[in-house]
Image (cartoon, rainbow, N blue to C red; front, side, top):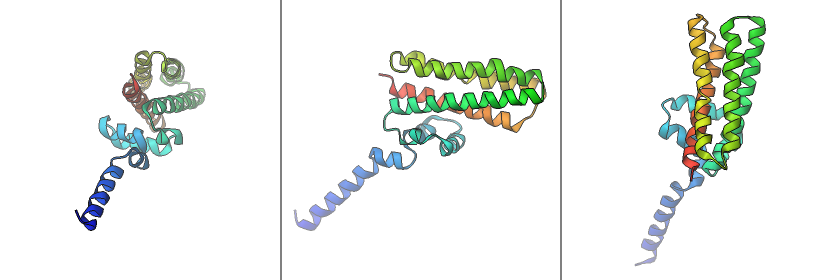
Length: 177
């Protein structure tokens, strides 16, 4: 084999290896973006959420690291969401909003915290807890519809929390030994 042929083979092999390496995946949004694109129905919403994400999520090099980062951010977003809803409930003392702020988002935050605590020792329970965190936004949404409340900020919050729940669930499932 002459030198130019050998060089061409080496260059081609390098291009193939580089294009399929984890660094390339991370450059495009990492494992989280891969989960968004490969498994979620709301790919656009998930990718939009990742633009606001904690940088640890986008930089995660393993599914365990990704699950921890997503759960940590989910606890923060759930808590911030609950604070927002409680403030809204004080202004507009509507029973549906009060229930979202209290009962439903208490469950969201508790589920994400529980998933985080269980992740290392019991990934199966952690995945369940991460998944049921989406029950809160779904129930909140049903309550708002029944009360004929159309609040885009609450709808957006519920959508984000549901996406985080699904993303955490999928990351934990990929991580689970």
